[in-house]
Length: 125
Image (cartoon, rainbow, N blue to C red):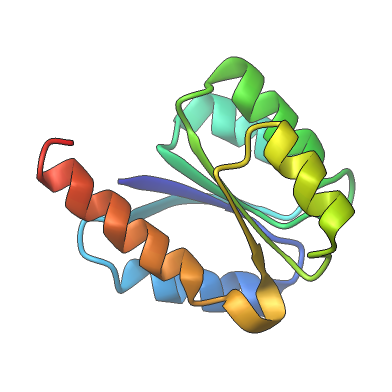
């Protein structure tokens, strides 16, 4: 399973990538800290899953989500953010986010979701 990570904080991004590399059958194919780079690389790399923060160095994860779901709606989108208020959650879900997690208390949920996706893929579901 190919995963692309979009996160503006190098510390959080490194922690997230390290956690994802621990999942068998998951390959982190790229990283970005801004909307333009994320969109460019995601279009080129065609990952199965994108993990997106809302606040980026330039642009937003919501902008990336809109582009991803317009071009490749089958891509699983996981929002992982400190901005986990109901308005952002509703906006992201309405744009096609498959999951929405609060980075401060649900960080590990990303790993759980990816493990489930890998298991369902292996089972042929």
